[in-house]
Amino acid sequence: MLIGEVFEEFINVVQENNRYTIGLVNDKMTVTLCSNKAEIGRQVDVNRPDEHNAFFEVRVKGQDFGFLWVSGNDENLPMISKLLNESLTVRLMYEINQTTLNQKVTKDDELVKYILNTENFDMNHVLSLLDELEIDKNKPRVAIYVVHNEGFNTKDVMRLKMKPDSKEIIYSLLNSKCLLIFKDLPQEYHNTADFKPFIRDYIRSLREWEMTDCYYFVGSIQKKLRQYAISYQNCLWLKNNVTYEKDVPVFFSDYLYDYFLSKVAVDDVRDVFDYYRECGKGIDIEEMVDICDKLFVNDFNLTQAADDLFLHKNTLIYKLKKYEEVFQIDVRGSFQGKVLLMLISYALREYQKRVQVGDEA
Image (cartoon, rainbow, N blue to C red; front, side, top):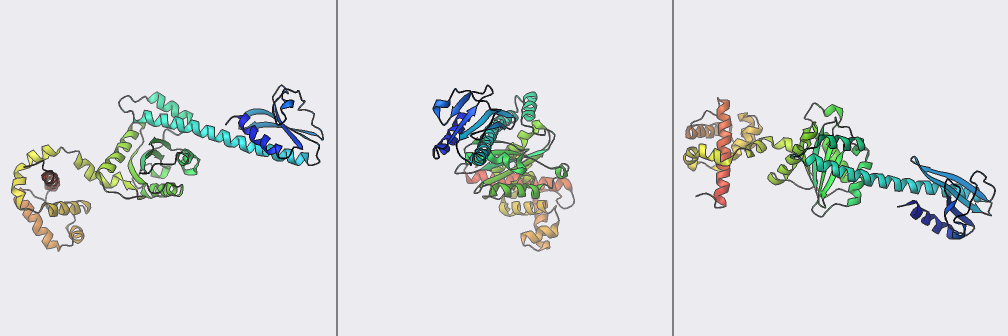
């Protein structure tokens, strides 16, 4: 909103009480805007206030807007003129903040666009935008991908940087339903992966900011600017490969095993282990996958895995012996055997999925 539009609001207020004339005087002491149109163009000396005329320099956040002139034949003029000056200053400050915020949002959008352009990454332009936004380029950040099926309130998103804990974020509304935030991490989390409580608290603050009924996907911590896009890609992988629920953050670090397994070419695994697949036709694949998952999350501790599976430890050992015999691998005494069992489990699971959709004979 321009100064003229702001001033029109004051004029409307003044016209409710026509005892006062309110005007804006430029540095040449010419009235440029006024509630009394006949006064526009008149010369007034702002250095000579009297009982009927009050003048105030209008300077907000380093910007000069001239002088506020309030005129009237009323004993309350000093008090009224001060109130009008304060009101005008506050209104102008709001408009300047909004303009600055809009400019920053635009710059943030541009910055995110350049960050995600991995093929033609322009480091110089990224650094220039970071300087313009006064964002610390040396802080590690993690991508938070927020999805709202009904669409975000654009004004709420624009106001994000007004949050005390969001001054250093880089963010962009990728579309009406998807918001990407690169959240900076404080010093104590620079060298540790134990950042989940901090991120959970931040996401809780977003929900208090009216960002509810959203899905939150949290990528990997990255310090190099070129790697920020990797964290975002991790979020997309989570969205496409794991189960999730509203307002509960999903962390990429909880799914590293699944992620790296997904990078193994299914056809390669199937081809190598095709013989074992034939050997394992009498095996309950779902049970085997479940057993392998529980062994993995418990670091192959048989006692803990058996508890999670609601099996007696001896029963679990019996099943592992069967796998060892069928697939000719040493699961319990060899690291390589453990890795092979996980790959075979993955291959069988993917094979079963293909059978269910009719892609395998």
